[in-house]
Length: 266
Length: 266
Image 1 (cartoon, chains in turn blue, purple):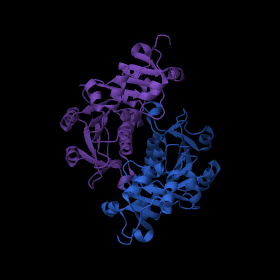
Image 2: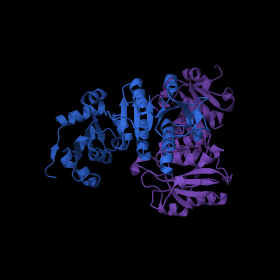
Image 3: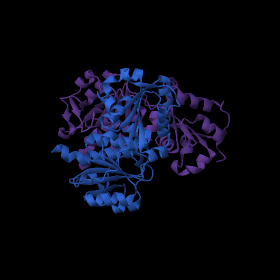
Image 4: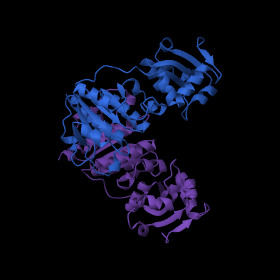
């Protein structure tokens, strides 16, 4: 550990950058960087090549040694920080003393897969929901999560809620509806709007074979009519309780499960 | 609105009781009462006969008039409170000015249904997860949620996370493993432990016909081996990502969806 440089001043430039990135959306957008906090998620960021700079307390380096890929010190810059400094830059209640500055990957121009399974987050506002959906997409083996007009993907709350799945999942952010539908159209996948309207088809009676993209809408207001009508079909999960009784992330999980079901069965 | 008595002092006994119930688990256990906060959930509490005392600001009474069952003033005591008082007793960031003291229903001795679909929460610690599972159970039309060794059902955070489904769902709290398995055995339902072990059966290849109870374990450590072995079978959701990528509430949602699927299909 002798090789690690220890930072002690909160006036240090690296610390200043970290703090700015953790509170300012603008800073993240302009620099194309974001932060992680926590041992496991930071280890995932390193493993998948997202981490540029890692900040870690002496104690954490001992405690979480197993979580870190052996050669992580070669793939990114590692600095030691004091417990005091860790507490200062932490955004969580129980700081683990492990942080990283990561770079936002460049926008891909790889087309969506013609036979891919996608979930589209259109106007979702809760970072916990977005994170949970990305986490579940990873578990289900969905091909990608497409975001449009939703909360910021790289905000610390969203990143944390993905539990590291943000580094393992193809998540794409579209600037507007046109770009999104353009991409979907080019791939030829079937688009389905999740809406609780009378003419929505019950997903128990829907086929999800071939390329599929299911649209989920805002927590309060759902999908705009214009978007729902632009989709190939409208679908719904049959429900017993009240409208309130299915959270959008949970609904997303059920859709992803149904979409990937045929693959799992065969 | 002339009939409503307005409370203004935080020394008022009703206010004191509310505050105690909202912070003290012991107080809730001893009195058999708990609290709700928010317009919709309180309306649900009134509608389903759980609310004893309702506290509401003048503004909230106007704003949420549609949410309240017409005769709610006949079914429970209603007191007006000042905005200041509402802010004082609120546990949330955006107080809506609607609160209630509710009674915990008496422990039922109705047996579990022989053909019922149940989810068992064994050692779950996160109120958000427990709430989300109860909310989803309501949506899916599951027959009941059985809790054992989990976080407190009537804590304000858990109640809030159910989004009102706590009043529409048969949620039973068992004092220990023996009482729980006794009840399950009597009903004759098939018990399945959700565990990620090698010999767990993939739920795509499992039948969930007839009476079923699926056990979910603690967020960090899962189900104890002893409990898992006591169940009739061990099952798992096939997973593509890492162990971390499926949250327990999401897993619960998928199990409930699969359990009730055959019923939905006809």
